[in-house]
Image 1 (spheres, rainbow, N blue to C red):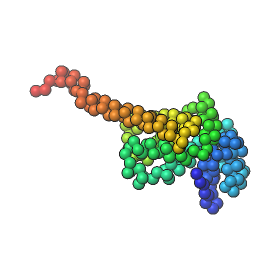
Image 2 (cartoon, rainbow, N blue to C red):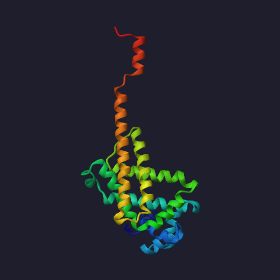
Image 3 (cartoon, rainbow, N blue to C red):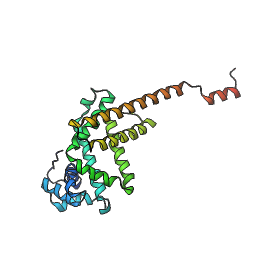
Image 4 (cartoon, one colour):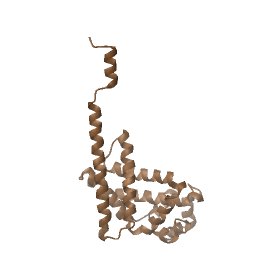
Amino acid sequence: MTSTLPQDPTLDEIRGALAPLLAGHAAFDGWTEKAIDAAANETGVDADIARLAFKASYSSKKLAMDMIDAWIASVDIEMERHLPAEKLTEMKIRERITALIEARLDIAAADKEGQRRAIAIVAMPQNLPRAARIGWRSADVMWRLAGDTATDFNHYTKRMTLSAVYSSTLAVFLNDESEDYADTREFLARRIDNVMQFEKVKAQAKGRRENLPSLSRFIGRLRYPAR
């Protein structure tokens, strides 16, 4: 991932420019201020200002999670650049979701060690609620890019399911040494199959419910028979 800065950048712009570089440096320095310093040096940003850009919105106790959060957000942005709407509209929904997940993996492929260190931090009990929110956000980005407009209960189940699919696929990916990540792609294909089958069953169940007679109407007719 690349990063550029405008002239006279704001702290938010500095954080956004440094975020894509953090995982690469975290492989050596951990998710610490040292990784921020290294990313700042790479982009020509003053280290003190770079640290301020991250510390401006969180405490030192949350620094690692906030760095991880910022990096994942940068992957979300880069994923959308890789797969703009005009590309996705040519695909079926299954192909869109598969392409989006594979794009995320390709974007982050060079930063496996940084991701492994991130997972160790994310898995800490105190970080699980925030990790769930971050996963939800990425799943929401993917579904929206895929064209999902659901506003009912499906809106939530789709995002929970996709978050679980991506998390399990990422775990396989980080230990995958097969050529062109063939094992990961096969695993992802199986998981997507499961999701599509689940969505099909849900749709069939919904159709059956809609065709069932209404209990309230039935009771109403017993009380007030039609004339």
